[in-house]
Image (cartoon, rainbow, N blue to C red; front, side):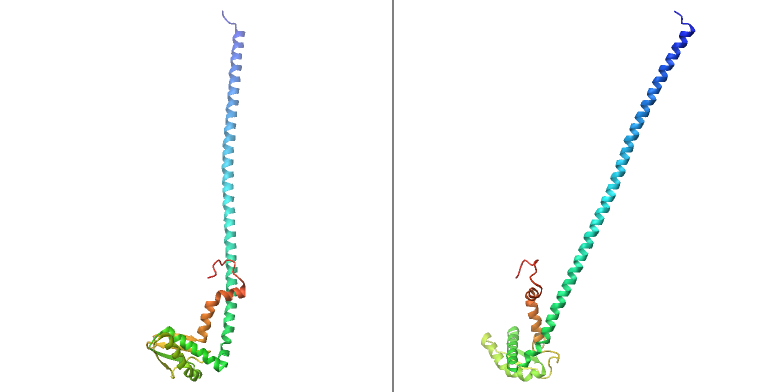
Length: 226
């Protein structure tokens, strides 16, 4: 059955409206999908940049914290060094004060002779040599000679050995020396220094822990006392 012009036109318009509607819906679908993909990509990029920023400031924060720890450690070390230096200075001051008082040992001749005797005997025990030369201050020459026999006798009685001891009357200890003796053997190759200064140094080394504890108190970080 043939269609008249009006019906054909109506069908064409209907088809065009259908096609236009489908195109519109398709365009809206494409726009929606593009918008969704855009939002997804935007979210991914934003999250990526946010993580970068967070990581950057996290590293910065760690660097700042590390710098603080290093600075704190340096300050603590500087404080410890200053404290140790102050303690060492004080200990040196004590040793210097003791050194200044060494001269008082020689003021009592009878007591000083006993000190000389002990120093000579001890030196002989350390050397255990058959020939020994003693060197002293020039002003102590007579005192050393007066106790030499007793010191040798003590040595012989204890070791059952004999020794020939001579006092050097040509070379003397320095005038700055507070007292005591030096003992030499094997042509001067072996020497025992038993001056009052050397004895003070030895006693300071041996008693350093006790001196520090007495002056500064017990070290809480020290676990072993021997």
